Length: 168
Image 1 (cartoon, rainbow, N blue to C red):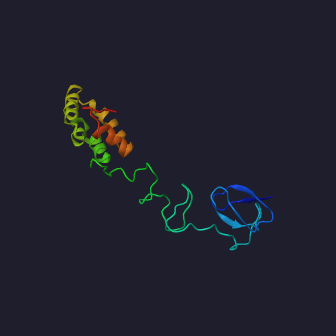
Image 2: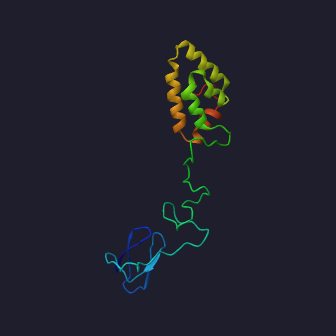
């Protein structure tokens, strides 16, 4: 049995000594069996991995040939990763805009009015008056939290919730 290292997934595996080509049991890459693990071929003669047919995706996290998206989603993003802060979700409310409103003029409750929570906006104005502006520190923290949370979490917490005054 000979030791091989797959050039595609970089895992070690064993194969029979008399095989002419071996297939990686982890990723399915076929390579020339003349080169056991630890030996190097001359420059330019390194066997390449088998190309995937057009339209099929390789397993998650593995490199694609140049020009093809790495992930199965059309936008080239990993699942659950937002493209940008100012992208609006299904509700049309952007967490980036709401976060900036909370950071800049949060004491007026504008971010609550933007999310459709008018009761929360009036409560925020009342708290700003009662606390003589100290409430602005809470809205600053809330704005930073809005900017850093995922879009689906933002919409669940601030847009679609039945709460009149969602705080944190």
